[in-house]
Image (cartoon, rainbow, N blue to C red):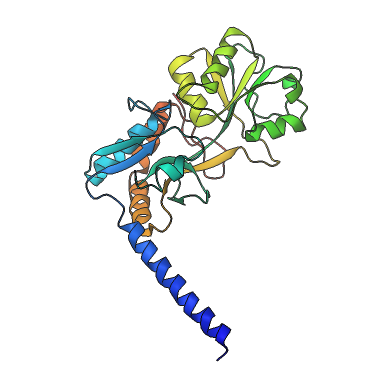
Length: 278
């Protein structure tokens, strides 16, 4: 046998052994005494240190089904979040993670939602459900910089008149989503575009004179709807199967929780609402 073949076989065996040990060790990291969650302490309406966000309520629901207490590690959702929390074994799950992200092992999705257009109820823009609508021409629209709808705004010539808000922030000190809605309330902008699970609950809680319209008629890339999962460490397949089972068996309660919060819930393909919002 060629010496290089021997070396390759030995190295491959060692890699497989290390991978097997890594998976076993990773699975052992999941706490048996608490439902350990890492979350942003200042990301309302999703999560906050006072546990008022709907992700906090979802964590409480899952913990109750596991018959465990919730234990939080708070860290701002910024660069290094996963590395300094989940990977550092400070928690076993991150509630609210986009499907398909390679930094985590995703559970099955527990919600599908979409970007929305938010306007005053008496606005001529009320009911606009596509960024190609001519009524948006020349209007000052609030948009989170570099978010998916910004690409569509460029395509339709809307970005020149837009007001951009920062994407990368420390949520403990800045709140561009709330700033945008306050600007809409004062007349600084004519409409706001926000991710539905952020905009919907904020409007329901703080801005009753606004209306929300899901942007469900965009046919070109990038898509504006996304499936949201829970994120766990790579390799934790037993843990992710347990969470998948809990998500499936408690789907009705989860939908009711999200609907009560004001999250616009879409079908899996993002083509329509599955629950009427209050």
